[in-house]
Length: 66
Image (cartoon, rainbow, N blue to C red; front, side, top):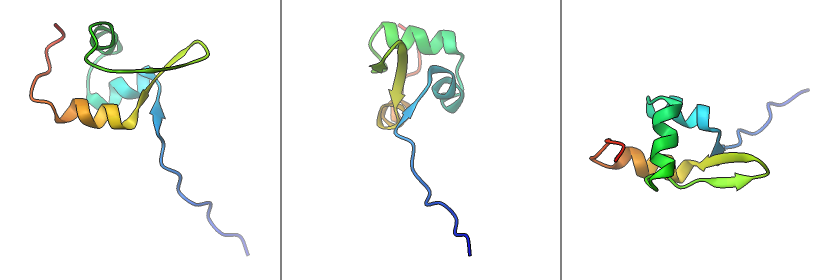
């Protein structure tokens, strides 16, 4: 009998995925990264946003780029 694979929680998201989850454009996301409002992890040539950082950012009151 086959069993379902255990659900694994994702820890890192691509820029496109993070923008979607925050309901903003990737351009706005890039602005937030550039001004230091969102921290990223660099793996190879990719910038990945930690889940904890998305939760922290979403809980903030402010949402303006600069």
